[in-house]
Length: 78
Image (tube, rainbow, N blue to C red; front, side, top):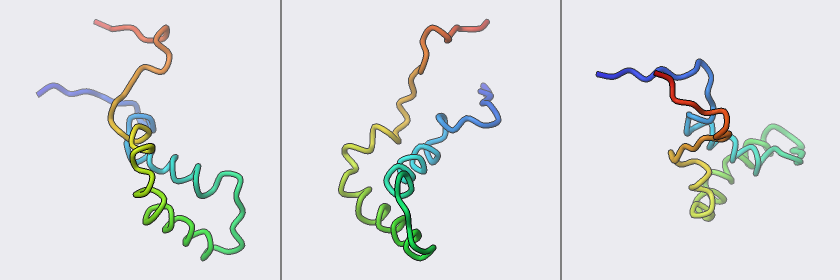
């Protein structure tokens, strides 16, 4: 067994964090909801309607194809 240690907090390595980010972009960014109920309904609408309808364009945002953000900062250790 080979262990691969991840940083304590690495949202770019966690697929669910990428999904939350996508949800926030479509539900909370530059938007105001009159009530908590309206906010909750907007979240549910995103997951039930917006996400399935636009999955082909969203999937690259939340998939597991990791890449090096800054190649000049990457180096192999060991």
